[in-house]
Length: 175
Image (cartoon, rainbow, N blue to C red; front, side, top):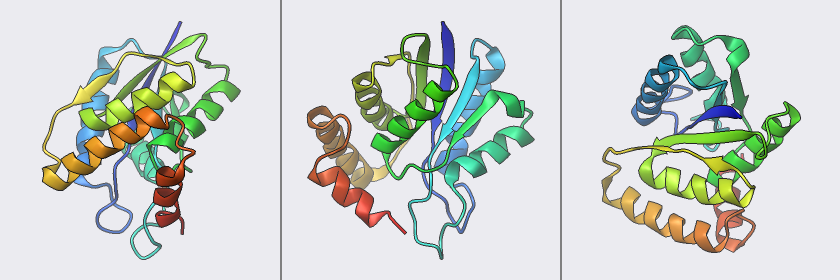
């Protein structure tokens, strides 16, 4: 059984620089990776901000961070097209399956804020993944908590993100 450590990205702030939350996730992921037990590190997040704020996929910046921290490049898989949590899992699944890492022979360990992990877990299970998650607890503010809670409900009713709300959200993030 292969074990995949999946670190979900957040945002860039300012232009093409990882925000503090993404760095927090990377630091936590690096600590977990260094303890061993994972075959592959999956970094997932694309471009979801306008060109005056973002021209480099978040997963590319995350990969550079992990390489600088000493993670071997051949152990890192970067999914760079996703605009939301639904696509994080959908596009990552396609990449992993192409590499022979399937829901049938692998476990996906999702690492992010606990609400983000809840959403990603719902979607991952809809693709057949076994999950063993590492939810992080840190403040995301009242607005983030409300939106995150709403999106957990959306994921429960639309686990693959094909409905109106996810499509509208992605349209706002397409540049």
